[in-house]
Length: 481
Image (cartoon, rainbow, N blue to C red; front, side, top):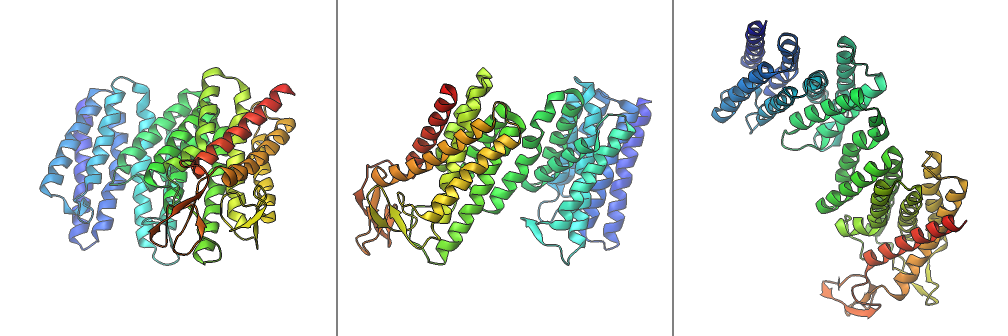
């Protein structure tokens, strides 16, 4: 039985390579011949699992393939399965992925069936996506980097169907919803994983998720952050919403929030993030058209801006995770509601005809910290209510109608307090060339001089303080009521 498995697995692999070589010699473009192997080689798992199960023999075959493909890569011996310019390191990564899970299977045999799902998501899902995406040239726009619409949809459908087929054939008990979640995770990781490493990330992650669905009931409580985080990262990268260090900080915040609050916390966090990205893009497009004054807003939010808006939420999540006390839900939601209210007020405020600084009782330039407008104020109220209402709608623990009202009101107060700090304490500068008041340390290509405010108290410090004030206020009111 074991010997038969060795013979059949080796023979099948040789047939796949031979077929790809013949098609290559017949003139089929390399982009298709490599996908032929990519798709067919996934079924190697069926042979290995049937004849060898979990154990050292499965691992031995994977190590043999890894050695052969590594030699072929180094010697550039298999042009029919290589990518342009890299001679198919992705093929080697595929073997690495299979070897890694096979090694785990020696100690945890139960991983081998979920491993089959991971292999099929990589081979069939990713493979068919490449074929379809490259074959359809009309009405097939790019959705992210070099990924096309139809290729992306094919990946999702093929990965979902593959997971469902494996589940049915081997009686794994996974429903269509769980298989679709696996498909979404496969899609997201395939989008954001660079350098061909998606052959590893997709295989391992989808196998792990399938295993979790099978053996851990609480996985459902974390399914949204698990499957949607890669897509959110892809969205942030495509919109240039965050710098690289900003993305790292955002991922750390996401992990903390998701571990503590699960799906509910992730939804609230995404409401703030996605809403803020949209508002920022609207604001920046308006600024590029030259209809409002200069400000210190950067093209992408960096790690300090993520910390400024997310620090209180991070601390609240960690506190809830450690203590389990539902009271920490209040500062978590309130801080994000305030941050969103402030972002929306600033973004919508640039469309106002005039801005007024009520704390210095004078008109000011639109977009300058401390300034307020009717449009921005109304938008701020709507934003605060939106985040609070979503927390209530999704059934956040301990979050009722009373908490909805208190958090929304506290968040709006925090946004007003943000304007107060921006007017009175935040440092501002004056351009000696054009005389404009700005928050930049450089204007008209010349260093500016301090005009008002306290040095080192910039917009990030103001954001942290206003989030903290809104959170403490909301928490105190809830406790005392």
